[in-house]
Image (cartoon, rainbow, N blue to C red):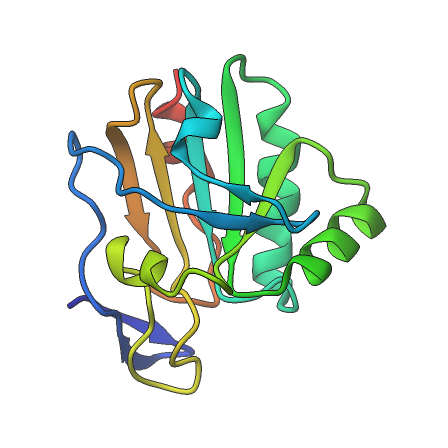
Length: 166
């Protein structure tokens, strides 16, 4: 279990992020067109897993915009924006914002994702949603970088995550 804060108040996650060097856990999440996606769909690609509570918050939306902008400059890299928002919300957000360099994924059919990646919030007002985290995996799907953002209302360390892609 890890502890982060939400506006200074402690909240706990269900576990720990995957360790650097470990195999990325399996997942099967829902894309904005209601199809499913998992690791096999991204074979040979570096992945940035941008995990957050909800697109309906300013910080979460900012992280999706920032990774959309940054992703365009990296070859062989896919940014996955993952939350408990329904696929319809992901689609609407990306269309309105004109974002096409990220893949939005919903955990609504896959409650195991939050547990397997150690990011499900188990206490506090956002209980059941995902904590803010960034996980970078290499083209063999080994974890190269991970950050559990210590304060949910703060943005992740973009530079550190992007450096892990170099």
